[in-house]
Image (cartoon, rainbow, N blue to C red):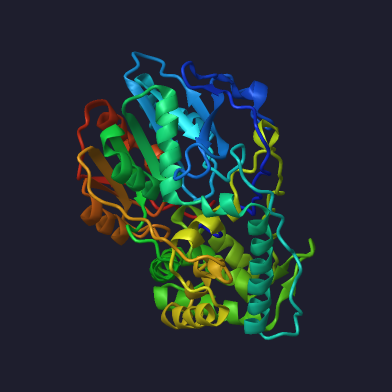
Length: 484
């Protein structure tokens, strides 16, 4: 998610090409070391194995066109009892390295009894997708803010339409139910009657969808940083920016506690005023740094509602700006493209993310409505309101939406919500619990999908080993202190 809400950088998906399937229905999967077949894979990783699973493009036409889904595995190191499939979210995010990151995390105990399985959803990296370059043409700086935004929206909408025209059937297929059906084909290829599932962020919606469609094939399911049971990008922006505004005031109170270090003020209202005044000053008088980067009001605003672990660095950067300096802009990762195992991994696909969200959210398709919602959001949340990034994704999207539908199941379900998180606000976890059931564990932090990095990841291992759920609260890491 841009800022703390989406993919870390702009990604490009992979081109559609006919891949040679490595799945033989009777023989199972042809596992090979990922480092030996997948371009860009870490050569030092000798644990992770890769294979392809062939699935129908359109499940209503199972005998028609097929596509290939890339799958990864780290086999259990002890007495094997099954497999857990992971999805790290996005949507549009690659899951191929998730088994490795899990095996290196505080949830590593899962590897004792389970094969850890990752995959690239259709449209992402090694799995079948589209090469969709973005148009970098910039608007005339002499235009008003609204008209510059309109130019960008119309530019991006045209690029999306050009990409859709390359393969309309594939784009229409980018939905959560279809990826859930792909997940079940992975289960079958693994030779498992039931699978465990561990999903984060949008991966929780995928899990809820899989459980709704294939509950009989779920062993146990854990969903961390839970999505809302109803996908509506307008509501997502509303809820996330409201949570982000709260984070801004918490950040300001934290800065006030360390006034001797940062000198913005000794109480929260004073710090709030100082930061907003700094934003206004840089909006009126942008500053260019020695590296050519521009520091302006948006630069300041983008630093005001980030996660706690970034607070010391952000406060230092804000103090540098206040004192006349220009911190260097963070470097963005270069996008890459390719196809099949020859793809240079990017980690995700922005186009796949947009397609899935727009295929499933009934949010507005016209610029003027989205712009009006933005103004209303800023009115309610002066700092975070402008950081809403979801609703604008579907401006000009040509097809109507079909929302996902989740229902309760009988399989064992553990939900995990994060008390202070602005990405998937805790209220979404409660709403999902009301919709599909399960036990809710709360983590006292603001970190998205952080369970596997905390000592209480032991609860996840216990859950998959024994089926025992918990409703207890887990302490998050302490709020950091200023750097010395």
